[in-house]
Amino acid sequence: MTGEFATHPGFASKILATPRTLIVYLPPGYFTSSARYPVLYLVHGAGDTALGWSTAGAANLILDSLIGARTAVPMPVRTIVMFRRYPTTCAAS
Image (tube, rainbow, N blue to C red; front, side, top):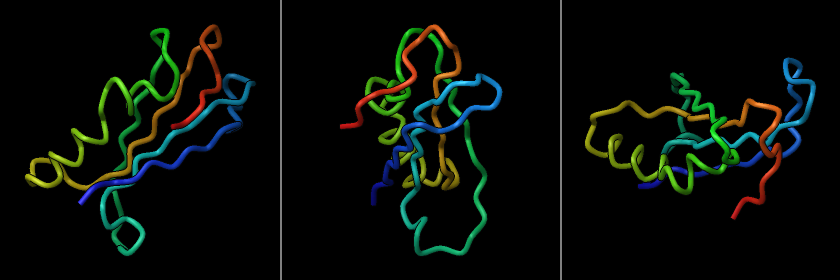
């Protein structure tokens, strides 16, 4: 089983006072479960977009593998770029 990504462009950031692209990994079974999940926040700010963790970082593949091996519990993962000088939007593939 594999998790899914959801992209939320234009996520309002009160702290940064600018919109951000928020990408969320949802673990397998998320939509059919009534369980409560821990959430992992992956913050990017080293010259990449919010897609960095899901493309070059392969976060979804790593999490699917760890969850499948029962090394990690299923959890949503939220990625966002925090620093103002880097791109605030990205095109999801």
